[in-house]
Length: 303
Image 1 (cartoon, rainbow, N blue to C red):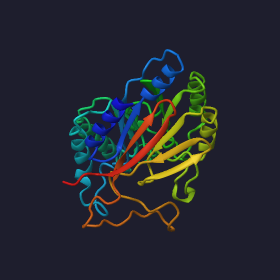
Image 2: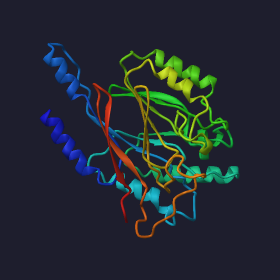
Image 3: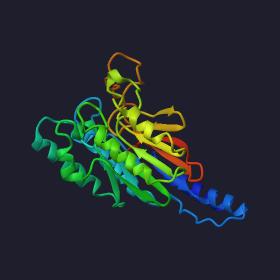
């Protein structure tokens, strides 16, 4: 484990920019297999970056620097000495607009900005700001499917769309797709789900829920190694449904109040003394053997 610890310490020195980075290691599982006299194929260590809720096109209070926050984040990720394998963006890429032409303009601008990332493998899912007004039509033109899955070095990733339906549902068709996708996985598969809204009822009156999210969770429950990363609520939050852990990421545009702490979910006011207060993303370290995650929240960098 010495090699893992050294790599881990090196990794920490690279993540001063703030979270979203997920470091995954399979060394522990290999060592355990070896001690049991079994032959194991090691998974390569890797990490990925999760970004969320940039709301490109937003302007005005409470973020007077809205035109630069995403660009600063791209520069910060590019400054990492060790680049992530890929990046996950968990929705609300752009700020909503009723104008279809303006919607596409914002998506094109967002695409061009993140196109400046050194890491060229970027996985997207929509937020309701991107997709709810046209059932994801414009989003698909620029970013492709709204739900899909892929495998990377021993982990199965599932992107769920709970925003294209304006009623905040996953929907029967996608649930059937999820069921079929999961049936292809071993029961002990390491599964990471990323979505925009929380799949559970956090604060339904604030639209912090998915109306049929319980059906998606029911399909995931038979699998012991499932973790969900999501956005939407613009803050760190941790929740458990049975053995499934759900982790919300901070926003790159403005923070929102703690769940249910006030009548309306109005953005928290901007503090000129701490302009990046409440903004950020996260670093998460994981052991593939257990799929347990150690999470460290870090702020968006200044400057």
